[in-house]
Each structure stands twice: as C-alpha cells, then as structure tokens.
Image (cartoon, rainbow, N blue to C red; front, side, top):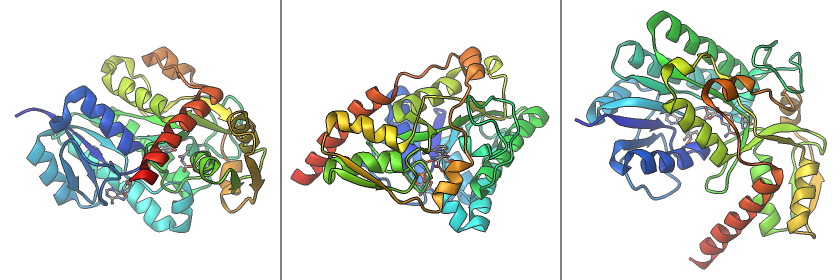
Length: 319
Ligand code: NAD
Ligand code: AKB
C-alpha cells in the first residue's frame, strides 16, 4: 500500500494552502486532510473529521491510509489561547505528544510541527533575534510552543524521532483567514482595504513584528521536510525570517495602491502580546543548514495580496 501524508488541522489558515501544495507534489489521493471542522474550500483528495486529542481515532486514520508523514497544524493561537489557557495548553501539548508517540512506536516516519516567534519574550533581544537566546515567553501559547520545542528535541535525541520544525512569524495569505493570532491584523487589513477602504487596527501604529507571505512559509515547510535528515542540525525549531513591518508601514504601502485608504488604531489585549515578541529575526542557521531564503518583501506581498484578494472577493460577490 502507498505511503501517505496526513495534515492535521487542515481547515485552518496554513492547512488550507499546505494541503493544496502537498497534493500538487504527491498526488491528490496521497495527501489526507483532517480537522475537527469542515474544510474552507472544496477538497480534491481525502478529508477526515479528526479530533487530534482522540488517540484511537488518530490511529484508525493513520492505519486506514498507511500514513507515514504527519503535518501537525492543530493548535490554539496566541490570542485565543489567552482566553482559554487551560485548553490552549491541553490542545497544544497533547496533540504533539499523540503524534510524537506514533513516531516513537515506529508507526509513522516523519513529523512537521510548527513553532512560532511567540517562544520569545520581553527579555529576548528584540532586533535580529538570534536562534539561541534568552527565551521567557509570557503567553500560554508561547509557553506551549517553547515546551513543544523541548519535547521535539527530546524525542529526536532519545528515540530517534525525525521531527522537524520552524518558528513561523505572522503569516499573510489571501486564500484562507487567520485563526485567532496577534498578527491577524496583517491579513484583515487587506480585506478591509478592499471592502471599505479603512481599517481600525487592534495594534498600535509602531508595533513592528516579523511577518511572512504564505507561499514563503509553505516553501520553507516543504524544503525542511524534503531536506536530507543529516542537514537538519536543529531539532527544536529553526528561526526563519521574511520581512518586518508595523501597521503604519503596512498602511503606507497599501496607500500606494489605494490612495484613499485610511487607518485608525484601537490597541486591545493583543498589544501586550505583540509587545513581548521580537521585531526581526536572525535566520542564519536555516539558510546555512537547508538553504532557506524568502522570495517576498513588503511591496511584493502587498501587490500580490491585493491582486489576488480583489479577484477572489469579486468572484464571491458574483456567485
Ligand atoms: P488555524 O487556527 O488557522 O488552524 C488550526 C486548525 O486546527 C483549525 O482549522 C482548527 O479547526 C483545527 N483544530 C483545532 N482543534 C483541533 C482538534 N482538536 N483536532 C483537529 N483539528 C483541530 O491555525 P494556523 O494559522 O493554520 O496555524 C497552524 C499552526 O502553525 C499552529 O500550530 C500555529 O501555532 C502555527 N503558527 C501559525 C502562524 C500563523 O501566522 N498562522 C504563525 C506561527 C505559528
Ligand atoms: C499568532 O499571532 O498567534 C501567530 C503566531 C505568530 O504564532 N500568528
């Protein structure tokens, strides 16, 4: 029976785009999408409803499709987890244990599990944040990601589990909506710029954060997963960088295409989260070990987002 890939949390912001690319690479039937909720877009391959906290259901799906590689995307993100810390911890940690255990038992061969810039905290150097540095996250999400990184490295060293990970910055794409993060404004702003030409931002104007266009994030994910195992020297999680900007800089860039666009600022509880995160990231190790480099900067991201989102929204209005 053919070895197959399973994406867990496939109906979310990253999963929606990752499944599409994995199916282009491996074939529609060889990539099984799964989530606790229905997908955002029509599926071209198998989809299963799966609660990752249900170990029995997970094993059934893994055996049914002969899954050998798992992309674990199910999680509560930073803003949502702050509203429900106990469940955030439960989901973010136990989902990872359930998948790591399958690899430890030799049932699956390879795991991708994303970490985040949220592993850093207020005591971390903010600019060009190094791979190895002080890490004192202050959110339940960041704490769960930091603990997850430690467990990934532990399972690799103790049991030889082939687990690979990236610390994604805030991700921006037009195909799917974000799921409760602090960086979500950078997607919402495009929707509102097109629909109403104005946006009220929940972060203050000077809040600079590391960000990345979704196709760069997907490229990084596929590249780290397809690299030779010997090239993956870091088994906790790799820093990767795309670009850094503040809401004010994003708005200025948008005005180049939509001159009448206006932005206002009403910082809420997410400001404190953003203030604890780095402003820019040093990704030297990812570049050296498995050839990482981004394709998108802020101007290219802005024109690409506007072009594609305008088309998508006008298609939806015409349906
Ligand atoms: P998302 O919230 O958009 O998607 C997560 C998906 O997981 C959702 O579709 C949700 O229904 C599903 N899910 C929740 N509970 C589940 C359960 N019990 N069983 C199965 N599925 C369940 O998140 P995303 O933005 O796609 O993020 C995916 C991963 O990448 C997460 O680990 C996140 O921490 C990480 N990450 C994302 C970003 C970003 O900017 N999007 C940045 C850094 C790290
Ligand atoms: C969030 O804002 O929670 C995510 C992340 C950077 O991990 N986008």
